[in-house]
Length: 277
Image (cartoon, rainbow, N blue to C red; front, side, top):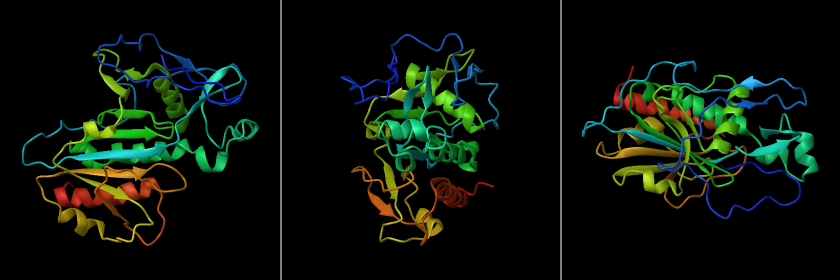
């Protein structure tokens, strides 16, 4: 089990990458109780995740027809780090753990914004691209190098507090399974992400610093329909993504945009291309 570490002194170095192996024993079992309010109170929240009790709208079955373009999102540099605060493991954030992070010589403002990933993931899962069945996969790469897979039909908690508790459980247990059929809705998978991307795909990165400023609707409309669309965005507050598998870096606005707003522009362009109403 991939346990979080105490943030005193140096981080514990992982000798091997921790991820969910298909042949491993399912650890979901009984529900976990994870404290997520950042205080020293004894209030605990039951965070058992099931396929039916998380709010959301049913997703259409994935259309795998040969003539259908599919969409994949990759979120890079997401701030999803677990630390032991007091007696509990918590998802570290600048809002709730500023004092704790400062004592451990961390920079709360620059590196600890899990709310960005939360908003970006919700925007992708809420999109008509996903609800129509065109979203093939969603991957999230953390700043610590862990790779998460989120199934498109997963119904994540709508509040950040429950989301943070879910991420703590996921990063410790390596997977979250649905009650009943045991399907793995979220799990840590082996790097690199490129092994899961289709060979016949267009891999597009987004950066405000790119000199290639484009109109997203026109750009998407001109991409060969035989190619799946892979959109790669940063889920951090500062900096830019720099990954070698991206084929084209573009900018979609003259102004800096939040990850969630950029995703909404992307999905809107794709929905228009696919004629999704």
